[in-house]
Image 1 (cartoon, rainbow, N blue to C red):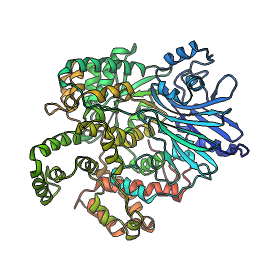
Image 2: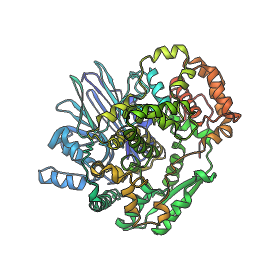
Image 3: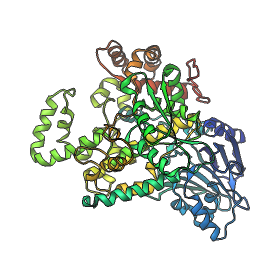
Image 4: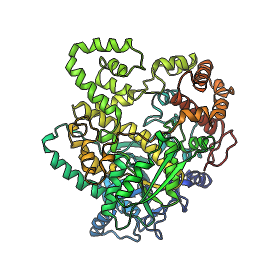
Length: 640
């Protein structure tokens, strides 16, 4: 795993500043602490930070072809590199390393930008073609690895693995987007392809960007195709196919020249991954779990049950976070406002894993495509009720509006009169700032700035884009193209890379994902059970106490933290006047939310967490330089 950065000037006579290029790479040194490498030529500069995983001796980057006319910097892993390498050798290409990076160089020589279609893995890379004066940027199909860019019209393009690398270039503006704040306060994150910065974009998953003297061009090379024509009577056949594909996906991700282990929560997905590690690895799997002192947030007991049953080496950490010191650190690593509080346990389990291994397999991706979330069961029930009630659903919706949201089922009743795509989108606004809450929160000036902003537009668009007419297929597709990428995978990438750990996601092997899209929804949610087919597979491998567990999530006790160790920091950030001076919020409403939560008149953990992370981002990247870890106006101690 690594970090990449660079700049391409359309005018070849304009050199790339070596000091800026070095600063870009240094800003993401946590992604690759083992070495740094650079390439500069007229109008082009590439930087690389390396975390050595495969080919420890000869795998340094940038890496070139034989005559140096094609250069590559690469972040990620290509798991089928041996297969692609053999094909390229048969076509006459010569290799001087054993790294997966070199297949990108020769693959580009042989197939051009379409080389990306042959790669199976997680990746973000840049290829410089000196003869054509062309830069190619590419990102993997599922968006496991990040890649950002800023198009500077008439000048060139700046890119990097993290936004902070781009911000080292003084020509990249730091102007922030009001609309991004509005969507963030709805969704916990800023949805792709936008960022909080007006000038910076996320390269979408499964896309390539080509830049040359004429400008830039984006194109999509893959899409997830839900067909909606699966046959539920073929359950046994689907089960055996799933078994074979999962075994291959896990086996491919065990390739490493450094110590390797796995995150283990005792849930369906991580237990499935570890069970296949046990089957396919020659070594006893190393597993790592993390919990908190509060029992309701601690899954270590379940993880240990799985580890013992599978005879794995097991390491458990009970985290007592120095949360006041950790929060500014998180704000710096995410680069833009990000309020999924499960980043905290993700950071700690990554930190614990890094003390034992350099690579860790995770179960991420199982929920979105196999029906693992609570809102999937709710969606399924709502669709059935909507169809059964017909026009009477409007009456049920009226009843729901008459009930307070604290009454169980009231929200679903309200959704019945909505279109399926609107009801789906609204399920992602749960505990964050809904429309009426925003009306109270925003200042009049800010309301005018965001006039016409559609905070849920990306969710509705993804729902509509699914090729299947099955409503649950549409939900799975939309989750995998939005929340999974912009929240879950962003969180795992930043928190693992914060401690220089490579995380690998077998559940997001694109062949496995393509298979999941062909499996009928009725074999994912069946007989009241989520992840039905995965559970059936796992029943062969672990105790039933694990396969029959409900999903608990990777949660953190943020409500208690806000009233306890975070109370002082929260008061400073919310009430010291700087937040008010930004002109975004009604400071009386902010004070009310904080006072109500602190005095237990009401609970607002997620909303307050959102406000804290937003203000920390402002102080780090807008008020401060954001140049170093945890940079802000606060005095920070190192989080341990």
